[in-house]
Amino acid sequence: MAYKTLVAASTKPLILSILSHGKSYGYQIIKNVENLSDGELSWTDAMLYPVLHRMESDGLIKSEWVIQDNGRKRKYYTITEKGREERKVTRAQWMNVNAALNLLWGSSPQLELG
Image 1 (cartoon, rainbow, N blue to C red):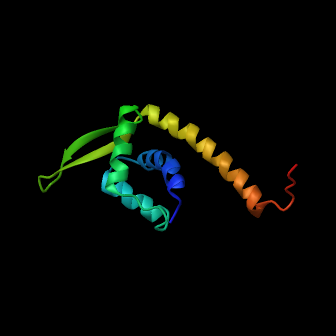
Image 2: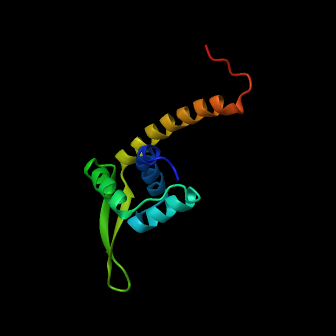
Image 3: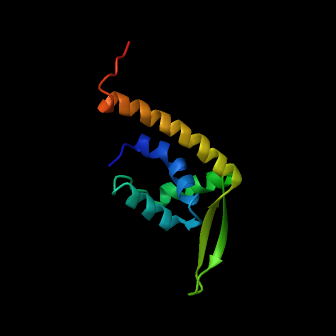
């Protein structure tokens, strides 16, 4: 299992990235994250929904209720244009961190630190 701080830091970029592939609902987002991380990231409803509500308040995503064939309502989330911009900026930041860690963790044998 990943450290809680790592899970917290990765929540928003993961949600924005998942929604950049199309609309989704809460349980499906949780399952996507679990599958993408080979079970390392395990989210709960209690963790996810406050984040989704905050992201919606910030204008990064929007939601709509959809009535299913069985008559039940399900809330779907989609990324907004502001969310796409945020994802772009966040992706660049994560890629920089990833590159630095790859250097430090041995993918570059020529690394010299001062």
